[in-house]
Structures are given as C-alpha cells and as structure tokens.
Image 1 (cartoon, helix red, strand yellow):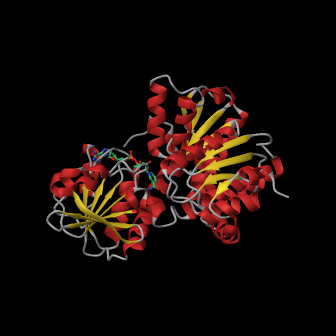
Image 2: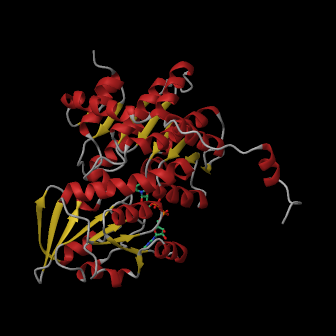
Image 3: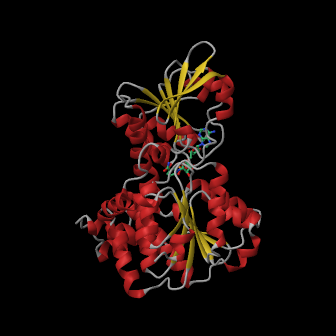
Length: 422
Ligand SMILES: NC(=O)c1ccc[n+]([C@@H]2O[C@H](COP(=O)([O-])OP(=O)(O)OC[C@H]3O[C@@H](n4cnc5c(N)ncnc54)[C@H](O)[C@@H]3O)[C@@H](O)[C@H]2O)c1
C-alpha cells in the first residue's frame, strides 16, 4: 500500500530505488558516528512527533541523516539544495525504503526547484534543515502563515550562515537557527578535506584532465579554497591563489602558493576554481583575458561566482562537447570550457563529499535537531555547544581506534595558573 509520503513525492524514477539503497548502505558503513546516534535515537525516540522540512543535497550521506532522524521519530519532507546535486536513485530509495517524502529531480530548472521547496513547506514542518538558506528565506518572504509553527532550523553551509546573519542583523529572522557549518567538526573537515578532494574529483571525472603541471587558480582561500588548493598542489599543480582578505592571502603565500590579483591570474591559469561564496569573482574582462582551452568551474554554494551572462556575451558559439563540459568559443577562436553550468562541481560531476567527513557534519546536524526539539533558544543564529561539537571528534577518533593523550592533573593546574614562570 502506498504511504502518504510516497504518494506526495515527486522524483525522477521509483525504479531506481534498489540502486539507491545500495549506495546508501555503502555510505553508512563509512559513517560510524552517525550510526551511533541513530542507535540512540532508535531507543530514545527524541524526535517523536517532529515534522522536519529539509533542503539538502540529496546524496547517499544525506539519506543516512534522514534515516537517523526517522529512527528518532521524525517525519520528513525533503527537497534538494541545488538543482543539479540530486542522486535520483537515492531519492527513490528514500521514498521507497525509508518513507521520506522527496521533491527533487536531478537537473530540475529554477521554477521546479522553488516548487519543491514550497512542497516541503506545504507539509507544515516544525523544524527546518537548510543548506544555503533558500528554504528559510522562502518561508520568511513568501510563507509567513507557517512561520509560527516553526521551532527552529539548522544551516549547513557558509553561504547560508552569512545570509542568516544578515537576516538577524536586519531583525528579520523569526526563529533560532543553529549554524552547523560553524562547528569545528564540520568546517575544518567538510569544507576543507571534503570539498578539496571532491572538487578535484569532479573536475577529473568531467574532463579526465591531467592536473600535474597545470596552473590551477583558486579564487577564495577560505576553508573550501584551502582544501582545493592543497589537493591541487598534491596532484602536481602550480597553485595561484586570489583572495581579498590580506591575512588569507598571506597564509596562501606562506603555504607555498603564488598570490596575485584576478586580472594578473586570468592569462596565466589552465584551470580556474571559485570558492568564495561571493558574486562574479571571475568577470567578463577576466574571461576575455584567458588562454585557449582553459577549464573553469565553481565549488562555492551558488552559481553566481562566475559571471555567466558575461561569459555568454563573449561567446560566438556554445556547444556541449562532453557531458557537463560546455565550450564557449570566443570571436578570435579561443575556447573556454565551463564545467557543470557553474554549479557546485563536486556534486554536479562527482558525488559530493566523502561519507567519512559527512559522518561528522551530519552527527552535528542530528544533535542540532535534537537540541532544537528540546530547548527554547531565542530567534537568531546560534552555534552548537562546543561539548557536542567536540564529542563528535572523540567519537570519530574512537571509531578509528585512535587513543589520544590526556592532560595530567599537574598540567591542568599549570594551564590554569599564572604564578609559575622561568
Ligand atoms: N562545494 C561544496 O561542497 C562546499 C562545501 C563547503 C562550503 N561551500 C561553499 O563554498 C564557499 C566558501 O566557503 P568557505 O567555508 O571556504 O568560506 P570562507 O568564508 O572560509 O572563505 C571564503 C573566502 O573567499 C574570499 N573572498 C570573498 N570575496 C572574494 C573575491 N571577490 N575574490 C577573492 N576572494 C574572495 C574571502 O576573503 C574568504 O577568504 C561558500 O559558498 C560555501 O557555502 C561549498
């Protein structure tokens, strides 16, 4: 018999559920911390009666977070946080095997994307999980009738947290949001190692290009950019970094990268990767200065980092030359290759972050959902308490069989004192 969740869902193809289930199980083996939380949720049912509305990249790792929340007693409606990141087989399995209502198809257009967000809000959720803050923004701007029923939300990424802090500054945020992104066990691992590896993975899967010997220009030396730069260097690239923040630029220099302006880097680079969370960081004049055959992509949250309308204006002809690779031929014959329509390349061309890092990110998410269910935080942007954040690191180390050093009483006393010197 079809459940209401199944009946409501809008996905690409239910027949893909078997393949999705295998992918979900594969990731689950690599997510021991989340599995531990799931076991506890199964026994304690801390989320009984909670209606979750989620807008997250629909990957096998996300599916394991959804399973965890379901085991805790939550009922879930899920949409994608980017039109091109959905794994259709995972969406099918979530509906068929885990009774999650899913509204997402890989490659949906912007209208379908927002329709899906509205379908999630139609389920009158009491808690939101967001990645990029589109769902939270939509509920404030267009669905105020359900605002009163929302206890709070979580936010997964840097761009979303920035938007939410802007809402809070303008006194526009009506409920508490836990910035999961800002947990140390999230951004230090997910943004850096996860994005770093999977971005290079996406570029390689899309193009089969050899990274060694290339000049790779990384725009933005934040947590994501640092990860991308270090992985590109590890594969033998010469890395150029662009950043507007002097400390970040200096750090990149001392990490062994060349640092310059975008105008100087444009004619030098072979591969350009944006990771700033900002708009048009590579603009029309930069595209116009690039060499023949360059590869351009983005791993920041939204597709605005590249000035795509400017690029289209420069092009005499646009052709898809491989899946996810679009050739822009300029008037003088130079060819620029844009990957994945300028959307998050690690999800568009690869599988998103490895499960081992999502284990920690989603352990933070699960704890944040539990906290929001059982506490009354004020409207605004909050961090997950450090104890919960650091517990994730402890559990991760335990799962890896690694025992770390402990402070002695003497050392603890010394650290807390001021009398003792040379
Ligand atoms: N692809 C993924 O899976 C993934 C994962 C994590 C984060 N993200 C996204 O990646 C982006 C960056 O995240 P982060 O955590 O590294 O953020 P961050 O704030 O740590 O770093 C952003 C960096 O970009 C720099 N910057 C801003 N404007 C710039 C400009 N015009 N030119 C050059 N540099 C500029 C900032 O000074 C900063 O150093 C965000 O959009 C975030 O949501 C994506």
